[in-house]
Length: 353
Image 1: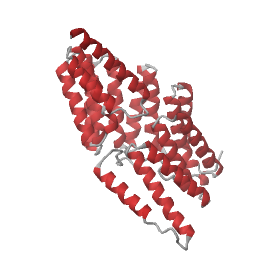
Image 2 (image 1 turned 135 degrees about the horizontal axis):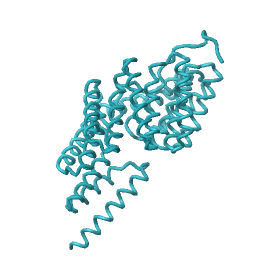
Image 3 (image 1 turned 90 degrees about the vertical axis):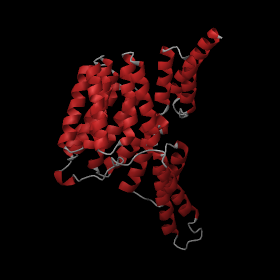
Image 4 (image 1 turned 45 degrees about the horizontal axis):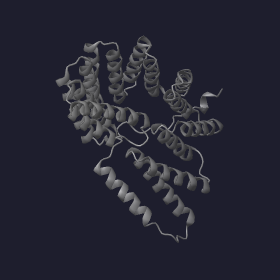
C-alpha cells in the first residue's frame, strides 16, 4: 500500500506515561497561570496572526489541563475554541490532527461515544490523505476502544487487529502491548477467560520486550480481575500485588487506589469483611492523595455493600450517600445503581424503626 521510504516515526498522540490525570493543587495553579496569560493577551495586536497563534496555544494547553482535571465542560470549550482558531489560521498536518485526536479522546473518556467516533474517523481520513501512516495504528486502536465501550465486540476486535497490522508495518512495536491488553479486555467482557488471559500475557511479554514497564501494572490488575471472576482468590491477589509493585516502581501511584479497591473486592467475595473494609479504605486514601476524585464513588459504594452484609444499615447508608455525592454527572448508569442501593437501605432502616 505504501513504500518503505514513506514510513516515518510518529510523534506521540497519547498522553505521556507519567502525566497524571488528577485534581491536584499544582494543576489548579497551572490552569490559573494559563488563564491569566489568556486574559492579558493584547486585544489590538498589530500582528493579528501572532496573537491568534498565542491564543491557540493557550486554548490547547487549557483544554489538555481541564481534561486531566476531569472538567469536561471546560475542556470541551477550550478544544472547540482551539479547533475554531486552527481553522481560521488554516492550520493543517500533525498539529491540527492531534487537536482533533485529543478532543476525540476527551469524548471517549466521558462516554460521548458517537462524537468520539465521528472525530476519530475524521482524524483517520486526514492521516490517510496526508500519507501519515505512522498514526493510523493508534487511531484504529482508539476506534476499537469506542466500539468496546459500545459492546460491539466484533468491530472492536476488527479495529484492534488493524491497529496491530499498522503499528507493525510502521515500526511502532512499542504500541502493540497496549492493543493486546485491549483485546484481552474484550475477551474479559465476554467472559472468555482463556483468551483474555492469553492476550494479557502477550501484552506483558510485548511491553517487557519494548521496555514499556509503565503499562505492566494495568495488565497485572486485569489478570487479577479475571482470576477473581474464576474465584481463584490466590492468583487474583498475587496479580493485584504485582500490579501494585509495578505501579510503585514506575511512579504511577495514581493507579494504586484502583488496585486496592480490586483487592477489597476479592476479600469481599470471600466474606472476609474486615480485610475488605481495610482495602477499600486504602483505596480511598490513595485516590484522595493522588487526586483521583472521580473514582471515589466505587470504594464508597463497596463500603456500603459490606456494611449491608454486616447489617450495619446506618453506616451503609452513609457510604452510599457519599458515593452518590461523588459520582460525576456523566456516570448515569452508576448513579442509578447507587440510588437503588440507597432506597433498599432506607427500606431496611424503616423496617427496624
